[in-house]
Amino acid sequence: MMNDYKDKVVLVTGASTGIGAAVATGFANCGAKVAIHYGNSEEQAQAVQDEITKAGGTAKIFQADVRSSEANRKLISDVVAEYGRLDVVVSNAGGLVKRAGLQEITNDLYDEVMNLNVRSVMELCSAAIPHLIETQGNVIITGSLAAHVGGGAGASIYAAAKAAVHNMVRAYAKEFAEQGVRFNAVSPGTIYTLFHQVHTPENVLEGIKQSIPLKRLGTPDDCVGTYLYLGSNALSGYVTGQAIEVNGGQLMP
Image 1 (tube, rainbow, N blue to C red):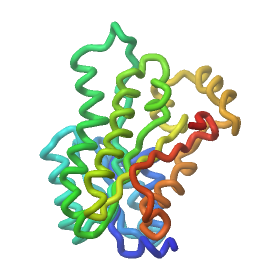
Image 2 (cartoon, rainbow, N blue to C red):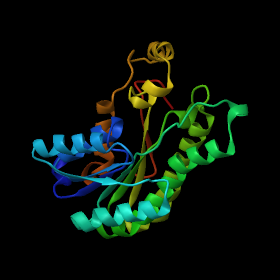
Image 3 (tube, rainbow, N blue to C red):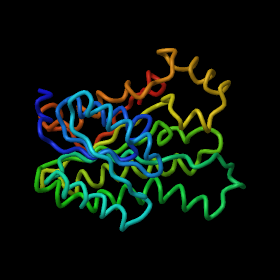
Image 4 (cartoon, one colour):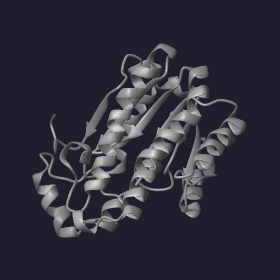
């Protein structure tokens, strides 16, 4: 059933490192033509492309600041101009920005976190939807365990942003169901990527690891199969408006 991706075009935002890089590689390994988006990490994005093409896959890198409405529209138009169609959008770009307690949150920080994690998703989906209606494609948005539990110390705005994203998935799934476009989310738990390497002390990560039933932190590769499942009409054609938890048992809703 993974032949479902043969000649399909998949855009993955935030695909230069971490979950995005692993997901882009996973789709390419299943035969998709992959658009690798990056914001600032051109060298890492190029490395992902090189890995895919070396293995016989098809990939091209695209730069865009997803916080910009114009950049999101251009990203979608550039991908369609390159490949002629768009079948799956993985809206994965996002980030914590920095940890800040309630009294440390400024207007600028609030705007930066929301623009990066919420407005960018809305605008990317808006730009992509005409093409996805044409191909009966689908959208997969990267949510977070934080959407359910409020996040760790200093992550309240990030957690709120991800909760908004989970609800946007439900809203857009209803809005576009009759036009054949599905919307779903992958909700990772504590995945050991640059996100936690930068923002979470090692002793805190160790405590989190001991609280997880599987007794380990997740890896980007742990997430790939869920994205592949959700992107495939053959495997998940009757699944929409869902957030699938990938967390080693850290949360069992």
